[in-house]
Length: 134
Length: 307
Image 1 (tube, chains in turn cyan, purple):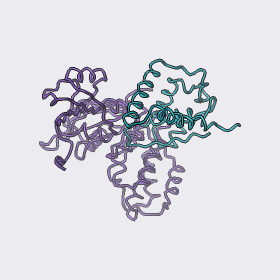
Image 2 (cartoon, rainbow over the protein chains, first blue to last red; image 1 turned 45 degrees about the vertical axis):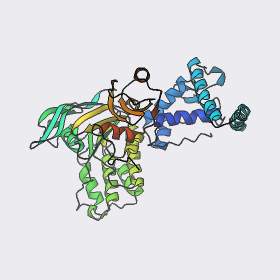
Image 3 (cartoon, rainbow over the protein chains, first blue to last red; image 1 turned 60 degrees about the horizontal axis):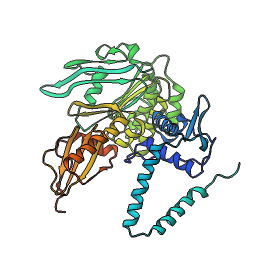
Image 4 (cartoon, rainbow over the protein chains, first blue to last red; image 1 turned 120 degrees about the vertical axis):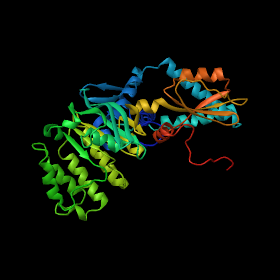
């Protein structure tokens, strides 16, 4: 499984947030796909030398956002994309972030077409890295 | 299990006329790793010694595993591991001798095989005398001695002080290994906040003998915020906002350090004070600790103005 989590203590981002973001990115990039199992809480805690509660906290947040599901006794799995809920507030927050980026891009003197092509190029990075067939 | 393994009630200690611990009242639940942080001389070691019954309080009381710290029975003591500051071990003994000596305090629960494996892993030989070991090696022996009885409660007083990064990591691994077992609890003091952030899920902050924070690490991370406000004219001289810890004003900017102030309260205040814009300043755990324990109005040693 192509999931390598690296944490940086002393960052302004709490460790559980770092895990949530890295798992989220791995899912978005297709490095892990629906049905893939995430490392067990205790195993990841031992590997990263962090408190198991911190890993559990990250998994809970991932589960609440619908990215993973936990099956009692067998572990935590990447959820089926169709079953992921698209929360209206999440989408709103995302739109606000995009607004910030657009404002910055325009302030840099970029043309709208430049911004669109940049966005497309970055997006391609995510859809390109699909997982090989098993 | 969410029972309390460690609790103090108004615990106070004077050395002569000097107060070192002021009315400490805390509860530490079972199953957590609690990072105990505070500046040098803030009272951490005194608090730990009082908890373990190694010092008598001037006032107040404390309980360890439900038993008064001043009257700990051998049965309670053998459920508690203690690593003292500086890893003081009996110097004339060999590693094997000190293991045998220590194991006698933990009848029926000493894991000799695990102890030997750790000593081997550290590249030490059981015949080596304590007095011939380096600081790091002595710390490693001390770690093995602390983990071998598989204590229900492990208390460590600044265990990684002066150790290199690799040995420090071994201590953190040791803590994680212990906490993975059902019902274990660890209290450790440290100055290395990156280590605390890694392994602790609870934090105790002590400042000049007084407990300032006793909560989950996540709560502390969320509670202490720094926000920068921008004004079109000089910022207001009077700042009336809930949770204000300190502020710094410059010509048209104002920086507030806030504790437990909600986002809406911040937005409300910004509006009422006539701020043009505001944004949070990112802080890591160390920044938060420094802001939280700095004397009023002071966070930097030098004035950097005009540089």
